Image 1: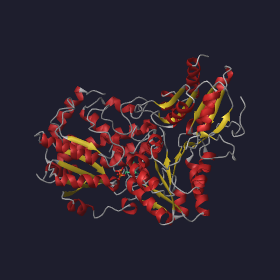
Image 2: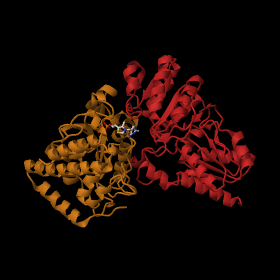
Image 3: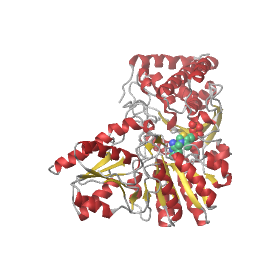
Image 4: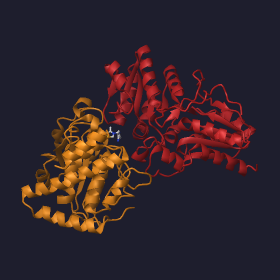
Length: 324
Length: 293
Ligand SMILES: Cc1ncc(C[n+]2csc(CCOP(=O)(O)OP(=O)(O)O)c2C)c(N)n1
C-alpha cells in the first residue's frame, strides 16, 4: 500500500469541524465585506458566537424559520452580499428544500448553504434530528455542488472554494469527531476524488466523517494481504466519474461509505456511474433504509457497521462475491 | 412499544378523582406536589443521559401535569381508545417532561425513565408515537404540532366525537410559518375543540424571543386569526385548570401561558443557557434540594 502525500501522519486527536468552520468564516469575513452569516436561532449550534461578536451587523438571525432563512439569503445575494446560511442540516435541507431548489439553485445565487452536524451526529435526539437524507434530496437538484469535508483542513478548503466560485453550494459540516486527515496543501477540485491509498484488490470510496475509518479499514485489510484503494469523495456532486470508472476497471469491487442513507447518496451515485460505464460489484454502506434506534453517534455507527471493522468486512465480502 | 403499568394507572385514577373533588386551593396543592415529582424525575433522567432540555421541560411541567391530572379525558391502560382527548407536545425537545408525566399516569412503568436516551431505549430525545404509548405524533422539528392538531380535531368532528385536542407550542416555535397556516385554517374550520397552549417563557435557544424575532403583540395575532385568547400564569395550577375548562364552541382557543424557563430551580429560572445545559455535581444537589421543599 502506497500512502499518498495527501495523508497526514496518523494522529488520533479528534476534532469537531465546527471549530475550523467558525475560524475560517471569521478569516474570510475579514477579507471580504460581502460575507454575512444567516441562521435560525442557531448561534451556538452553528458556532457563530465569535462571528456575532466581531461582526454584529453581519449576522442575520431570522429566528426559528428555515424557509424564511433561505429566502432571505437569496435576497441578500440579490442585494450583492455573500451569505453563509448556517443551520442544523436536517432543518436547513428538509424544511427549506423548495427554497433551496427555486430561490438558490434555479435562481443561481452565490449562497453557501452550510448543513451543520449532519448524519447521525445528533445521536440520541433521534431520526427527526438525523440528517441522513440531505445528500439524496440535494443530489436531485440541478446546479448545486455538494461538498462533504472529511476533516478540519478540508472544511476550510471547502469554504474557500465556495467563496471563490460563483453560484450556489452545499457544504456538509461534520460534528461527529474526526482526526486531521489531509495534508494542508491537499487540492480540492470539483469533480475530483482525493486518492489516499493505492490498491488493486478493492476500492473504498468514502465521504465525510467516515473517510478516516475507510483508511483504517484499508490497514486492517493490508495485514491480510488485501490491497485496498481508498478514495476520499469531498465532492458528491459533481462526482469523479473517471476515478469510479478506473476503480471499476482496475479493482475487483467497490465499497462506498457515508454517514447517510443508502438511498440516493454517494453510494448510489458511484453505483450509477459504474453501471453505466463499467459494471462491477458495488456495496453501499450507510444507514440501510430505516430510522435509527435511540443511541449516541458511536453506538449508531457501530450498529450500522460503519466502523473500520465493518468496512473491512464488506470489502472481504465484495471480494468473495467476485470470486477471490 | 412499552405497555401500561396497572398499579400506576389505578393510582393515577384515584389521584385524578381527588383533584377533581378538591376545592381550588387543595387542587393547586395536589397538582404542585405532582409537578415537583415530575421535575425531580426529569432532573434524574437528564443527569443519567448527560443530555436534555431542562429549561423548556421545567417551563412546561405545570401545564402538562394539570392537563393529565385534571383536564384530559384519557385512558392510559387503553392508549388508543378512539374517543380519548389528544395532547400533542409540539415542542418535542421537552420530551423528558412528557415522559415523566406519562409515566406518572401509568402509560408505562416509571422504571423505564431510567433508560432516557440510552441505546435502544423507547425513550428517544424526541417523542416517537411508534414506541411510547400516549405519544400522539412524532415531534422534534419545530412547527409540526399545530397542523397535526388541526387534522386531529377535524377527524374528531367528522367522526361525531366530542374529544378535544390540545397542542402545546413553544413561543420561539411560533416563528415557524407552518403554525400560522394551521391557525388560519383552524379558525376557518371553526374548530372549537382545539386548544393551542403557548409556553410563553420568553426565551428560545439562543436568546429572548423579543430580541430574536419578536412575537408581540402575541394575543392580538391570535385574535386577528379568529381565535379566542386566554392568558394565564403557566405555573398557577388552579388558574390553568380553570382556563382549560372554558371553551368557545365555534372558535379554537389559544391559551398564552406565561411561564419561566427553568421554573422550580432558582439558578435556572429565566436563564437562556439552561435551554440545554446539563447540571453537574453541586448544581444537581442544589436543584434537588429546591425541588424537594
Ligand atoms: C425546525 C427546527 N429548527 C430548529 C430547531 C432547534 N431547536 C430546538 S429547541 C429550539 C428553541 C425552541 O424555543 P421555544 O419554542 O421557545 O421552546 P422553549 O423555550 O420552551 O424550550 C430550537 C431552535 C428545531 N428543533 N426544529
